[in-house]
Length: 330
Ligand SMILES: Cc1ncc(COP(=O)(O)O)c(C=O)c1O
Image 1 (cartoon, rainbow, N blue to C red):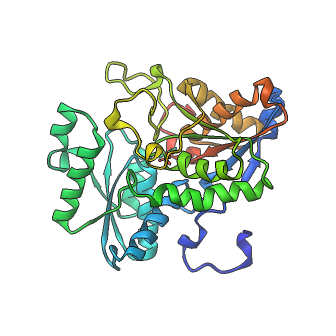
Image 2 (cartoon, protein in one colour):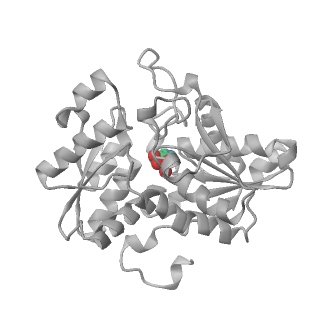
């Protein structure tokens, strides 16, 4: 949708309809036999793919009658969902409280505070420090503690980890946009995973259109995961491993919507960072960590002989500006 054709009522109307750009420079540089298309989600109004689900969950709760003007929304977010909620809440007359993960980049918490969101650490939620110490981030128990906290404070807990409006936002918007933009010519889709809403929702839609679609999830390789014993390690911010993790820490939508990737690629964070730097030069695109990782995974697929002549879409969740304090562009 060309933005210049009308006056918009609020930033909420600018969510979605992001551009799909062919990475001609990268294709040339690596001699790729397949087309690699980047879905540039940083064109969303608060700068990431998460605007889609924040709006989808808010509108879902409004329609269900569980969210009313002036209410305060609470969610747990590594940053991007929080920023999306904070922005869209301000545009729509809600307040937002974000429970953030330890180690979230300085830029992310600064942006949240600037929007006026209240930030809560794990130590602010009764029961969470004990859960983390004894069992770790077991989703079911963690979500129950957040729900109790939200109820006690009169907040509306819109949980991106369990709300079907998360994957359905992608099923209704991201998938159809990719299908339309390519004229129905998509052979592969790559996404990294936090809640798995993007992979599951977009993947489900595109698989329904093209049952031969190669649906690929990517995750940080073992040596690129957070490890207190190796604080020097580079990781891929905002996303998690989802294969080979304990059952209680599996993103829920894969089983719930019965959408599983055909393949999962383990990615080295340093290689993803290098791809981010390459893309600035080859295509003039300045991506965030998980976005650069998605392009890296797509490029790996595009190098396979059987993918010659095919079209692979990489979901690029955000751009680089929130990661300038991290090692990717240092
Ligand atoms: C930077 C970034 N990339 C990718 C994702 C993955 O998105 P999803 O939660 O839809 O799996 C997230 C959020 O979780 C994110 O913050």
